[in-house]
Length: 328
Image 1 (cartoon, rainbow, N blue to C red):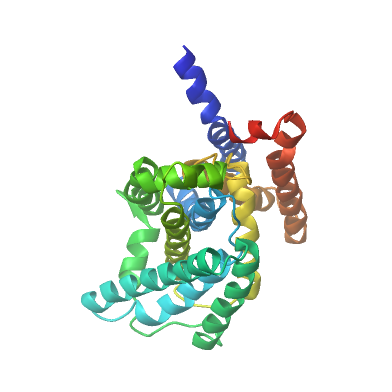
Image 2: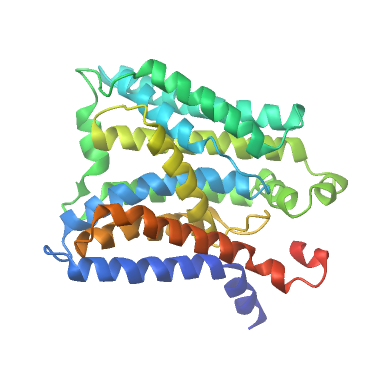
């Protein structure tokens, strides 16, 4: 019985995010003119998966008690780069995909190296590097577009439906969880990331590879942000250096991880919770659409949800009697 109570307490944020998403999505599909159909679900899934991938990217850094304000710009850079090199023959497309993911990981590695060896705060570092990444994206795509031989067939396969029913994007997201998150969570590096987020000094005194853990979190953040950029390229068939999109996805990723039960103080939460937080946050726009509200209201509602998310994330401070309780 105690084990179940511990599991429920540990996964409380994830379960609340899941419940919120199911509630909002149920309201959405029951009021949608087309109802609960594969096309409606696939469209919603494709939009949700993009934010979910960026939220996963943010989650890794937040678990170390940091904030990555460059995830949105890595996301935009991957979108612009992918519109150029994910094209041509099958081999060229494969190399292009590898190139975009490697570029995203390299961006994360740069952030990690500056934070670790430059001894700068992540929030300061990633503001600066984010501006650099956006500058590169703008240089690549001063105007929206893509290559004539862009990988349209692959894009259609990953943004379409499997067996005319299941959104392929959700299957892809599940694959990312299985291949990236689960092995990470069970590894020494994963345990180190949680330990660093709980107490950097305690993790170091325990003999854990603190620098490697923090560096890995930033590399995985860049890698997952690049996956989100690739998916955006597949949905839009285009690359666009949009500063607004980069800023929005950065802010939305922070809101998503908090909605998903990931502590802004580090050491608590999971990428799965961040995913459900992202899906719930994305459902706000869908609800505004289905109820035919003015799109100009969307930033207001998203801002309210973002404010509530941050407030809920900080609410635990008012219950703390001893600073040591933050690390329990």
